[in-house]
Amino acid sequence: MKLQLSKSNFVKSLSFVQNIVESKATIPILANVLLEAKQGRLNISATDMDITIFDKIKIDNIEAEGSTSVPAHTLYNVIKELPDDNPIDLSYDQNSKKLHLMSSKSKFVFSCLSKDEFPILSDETFKISFDLKSDILREIIDKTYFASSNEETRYYLNGLYIHTATVNNKNYLRGVATDGHRLAQYQINMPSAVIKNNFGVIVPKKLIFELRKLIDDLKENIKIDLSERKIRFSFNETIIVSKLIDGKFPDYEKVIPKNTNNSFSIDRKKFLESINRISTISSEKSKAIKLNLNKDKITISANNLEEGGSGIEEINVKYNGPSLDIGFNSGYLKEIINQFTLEEITILFSDSTAPTIIKEDSKSGTLYVLMPMRV
Image 1 (cartoon, rainbow, N blue to C red):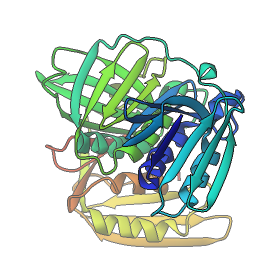
Image 2 (cartoon, one colour):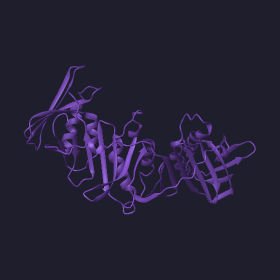
Image 3 (cartoon, rainbow, N blue to C red):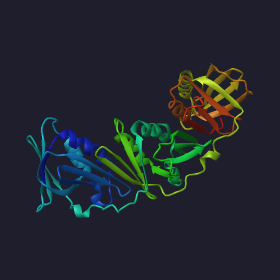
Image 4 (cartoon, helix red, strand yellow):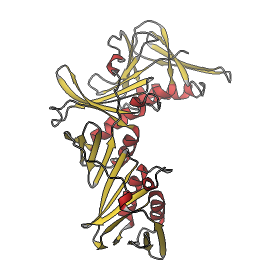
């Protein structure tokens, strides 16, 4: 293998490919990125055995085709420190199994492992395929991903549940995440290519995290393919394939209250600013704040028993229900409020112990459920 390429293309590709690689891989080859020069492209791929990513760089000057695998993080750290305006020459010596890199007056040598040691993906039959606008996928992720769980024991909550749903004879594509304390749901009208297929898959958190970075500035549509075990995202010259979480997502709709006979609407910005101030006094461990509701008034307060401090604020609201107190984790509440953009949000509940719904207007595809806490 012998070729020349620019730093900008190489470092961009390596920056997200190497993120898949575990920093302390137990199997040596999994610490490497695979480089394959052929047919005017440098193919770059990496895997952790759950997620595999492929990228391609167009190369004008491939002097000799070939392949090898190189320590991913080391290669990336070297490339990103090279000057921007100098081309990079790569050449692989088959006899010594070394990759030589030269750029201006810089020279580096990397020990390599053979392509033959690199894990080969088994063939997969993807039975469902559809395109999704990149801005819609970003919205689904941003509105829901933060609520997913980190608990290993409930592994089926460690991801984003993407599925089809039918409500009042209307078909939707829906993303849902929950950690048992809060639930986030975002839905869009069903893309025409999906209407004939009903599915529900749990996409792992690591994939969602890496995918979100990859599509941050993407303008093109994203092709999504589904099999029983895997999901594949394709866009530009990039393909990312991941195992799905093998588990059953809970029947989350049972958690969403159907009868909420109390509600109030409040200025989103004022509410968030008040919670930010009051939560500074709350216990670092519980992050608890209390909402006291009376006619057309809400009082937000917190007590810190460890340090002996307290804080209280009042806000005028549209409320005609009974007087009651509701406690919330202020961190969870702030995260939810930050997902909204309209001036006013609505909070619906039946009593101080039942799950609480937080949403914008009735036409919004965004809905959150937050469990209250004792304060």
